[in-house]
Image (cartoon, rainbow, N blue to C red; front, side):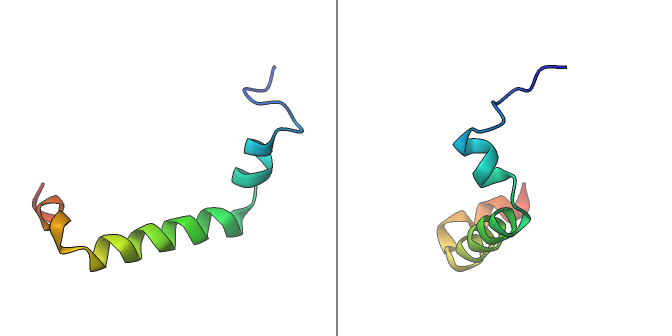
Length: 44
């Protein structure tokens, strides 16, 4: 089976680490919680 991204690709290096994924998820969750302009997303 062929890889979607090359083995030595920068995309695989960034998204292949669990810490990076959790850091991005935590940052976006905090931004979503602090930004009152997106309150309508809670109700959809």
